[in-house]
Image (cartoon, rainbow over all chains, first blue to last red; front, side, top):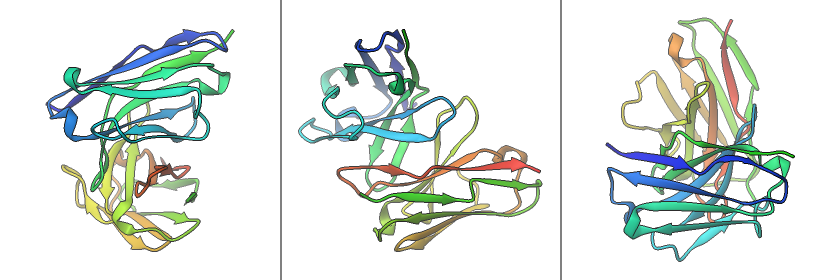
Length: 118
Length: 109
């Protein structure tokens, strides 16, 4: 079945880095835009970044621009998010989400937790 | 940048009652790109409605969406116990941003 599985979360000190991964299965990954959405503890949803199907178009939320980098490897059916210069306010569950323009964010992973704390 | 404001913040209702959730945009945008999501504790969000009024696969017909311009509504008729959750609207007509509203919690009265 259609599935997205995130990994790579963990506890990191302020200023540190992490690389999140998302493994896709059950659909033709290279046909779809992909996004990362995060949710801080007890808070709402925040869109972080998205990448076009080919990887040629990328956008970031202002809150992460210059610190986070989204990428994909269509040969490996995988999406990535490199998180650098992490801050306490980046603490959140990070969801990998399929973005199909007519339908919105139609497939969500279970999320991976990033905690930034000294 | 379009800002989405959801109201009310919390809705206290009993099973069997109807719910009406509002999502208002700071500027007009295409209804083709307005979605609603449901999120239960400890779970990722689930797509309910896309294109303002189309139900996603497997979504019961007690959920309906409507609206255009800047004002959108999610209606739930006859609340079932599993419908008590947080609901988010989102506009996805970007680039560059895919904005979410702040959410409405539907709780059991």
